[in-house]
Length: 623
Image 1 (cartoon, rainbow, N blue to C red):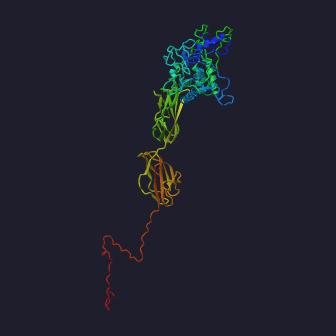
Image 2 (image 1 turned 135 degrees about the horizontal axis):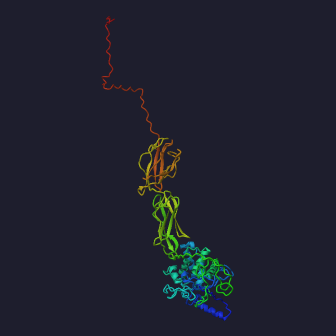
Image 3 (image 1 turned 90 degrees about the horizontal axis):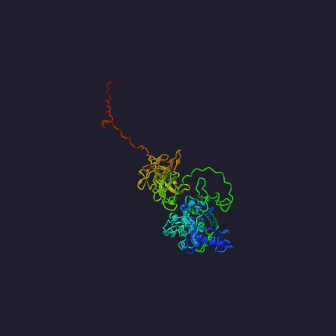
């Protein structure tokens, strides 16, 4: 590959020849500064010594077309009014046209929502916009943010630029033969076809609209899981936009400048850059190209930021120079053949963000299935739904809640609409809160967390199963047990917690410390039980109730989870005592009862006949 020299325009040329050459170079570049009246304009990169420039198939957003090379002032910018030495309008270079600045900030906010891990700063968009088009030619945009006239780069016809044949039928760039970089952010049509955005909501993806172009640039810079807060990722992002180390240095300088301070100025009043990068001309370079590198091709490769610089042809030992060259190093062994390059996914295939797909509140009663299911949507780097993305859902918490099948973790792939829905959740028996986490992507995974709640089983009614009067003698226990049934919507309420409390009033507002009581596990009196639960039929039989030595009527209140309650009367009363019959002294003795089978006459006592007295002088026999 031939080595090319970069030429740059500089003010203050000292000879007519230099001035003429500068005018010719400017005309050849077709840079934005030369097209304020509506002619072709653009920004990008040229092939030059000491820089790495990519061919058309390398996929740079701008096609490596020309770009502005002006550097920011050395004076640190200040916001208007922050210094008495500055005019209220602020430094012209630090000011950014209102619509252009709004577009950059809107793009930052949008990307922060869909891809927060990228950490895109709007100042990076401003730096690229400055280098590519001079902030849309100083903010010459209409009320909708569309550049007027449109901004076009030179034809990418291989004459000093990359060769990119027409890909859009001239729809964006008006050229049906070759592509041109288009708009404030200088996208080539083939790149815009993949990354174009409609950020202003007018139904069109227009590369000449600063809102659309700024959002497209933001998503492009964030591709491949880049974190732009990391210096290496930021460098890779800028180089993917225009593969030139000088371009990277220029963008970096404006980024630093805008990060120190900037302000809004009216549209159309921005300062215009004056020094575009220049091509080497249309005639091919006939100088000999350096031989192929050991084990590789003759095409230079882009060094990582911080690596060794490219050879400088202006110094001895550089490429093509007649100056003495250093002694060559001993030949090194040929390295193993490189593995075939892996094609990077297109923006439409690149996972970009994960969002809630309409999941409602997650709330269920213990032991019941959740009516709502967790659903997420994956989007690609363009913001469109992305299918076949694995999403892992995980339940975390102590409620005992699991997915159907008894699993705490499941993985589901997104469908054609980009959505993945987790299986049904089954609430555990422990009331409380837990979380469901959805994770997708590798490298920098995207995570969504959903809060969920398990409520205790509830009853809306609780009643006694009989109407027996409950009484006990002082110091005794109640002979009849208390049995109740809890229901919820007329169905048996199983597993419902019930609290039993001795109270003084029917409303149960005042607890009672006297009268009937329960016994705890140690046999000690207690007048409140909180460990009661209905069975599978919604039934609950209370433990034995004991009476103390105080007579009276007492109240027992049973309250079920859910608010249902019933009040039951308990009576402590001594049993009635009946006195034995006493016979008074003047009462006659009861008649004797005749023996069985005998009549009263038969049982009468035998009467003795009166004795006969003998006549006087008569002797009784035996006398």
